[in-house]
Image 1 (spheres, rainbow, N blue to C red):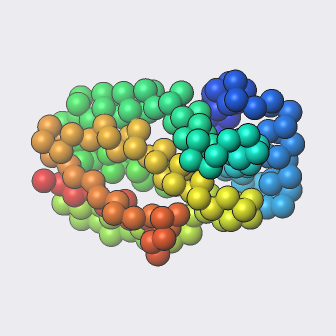
Image 2 (cartoon, helix red, strand yellow; image 1 turned 180 degrees about the vertical axis):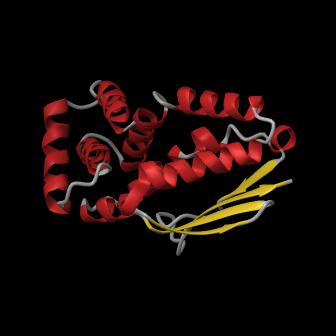
Length: 188
């Protein structure tokens, strides 16, 4: 998924800033962070593009531009795929919590730390360590964390509480000053 995100983001940000400049900024960020996380290339790229845009436009415009380039290309696929899976399911709660578990295990991995509470009527995951927040702090652009948080809206917004009998709550995130990022699913 990260390769597709990178490709789509580069395609959209290229209209705003020269890609060699973005790549150079992303390389500096990746070197400063170090390691081989599969999340580092996309996080460094988004942060590098934002740094480049900050030299060209006001902060609010740069945030909006980066968010648009990061969210819009992939949103229809994530949202529509999630919605279709929930609409077709006999038990949407099991489907959405299964998607969450799969992402926790197979996508986020060791770069994030989770605690879980689970029963037949709820699945509560709290993220205690967020790789994105760490990279953005090293890059000197912690305000960009909200753009990464808002990426989740694509699949979260696919949940129709009345139709799917599932509610989702995430009142805060680490990037927004919370001590955790709660992903709380409850069966209704």
